[in-house]
Image 1 (spheres, protein in one colour):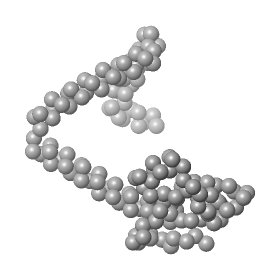
Image 2 (cartoon, helix red, strand yellow):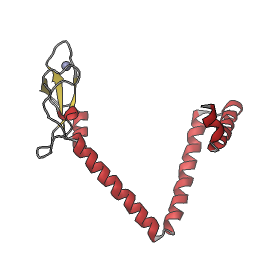
Image 3 (cartoon, protein in one colour):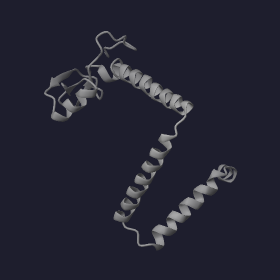
Image 4 (cartoon, rainbow, N blue to C red):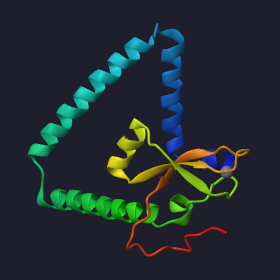
Length: 151
Ligand SMILES: [Zn+2]
């Protein structure tokens, strides 16, 4: 650990930053409201900077941006597919004790989740367990990663 601290040059900047921040918090009359005000000003300044930057954008920057968006989209699609085919999330057995689950009425918050990811609310049939929660609705044409039933 000490060797790591000694070898990394960015530790100096971190130490300087933390020290300055510490002094400010220690000596200056900083309140939560003033910190929030500072953050607000900082975010506005960053927005203005980015807006100016956006006007003089190059083709390669545009290509880079599109690649990032494309990669994020591919990742999101894969993540969604995995959620809807992984037995751990779609199985109809209790994740705590392995007993059977019974469907329950969904809450208004569940319907909000359901807009992005189809879910059902379940309760464990085992009275001693009492688990209750959401399970993801399995993709009908999805290829299960493993067997869906847990014995
Ligand atoms: Zn259970």
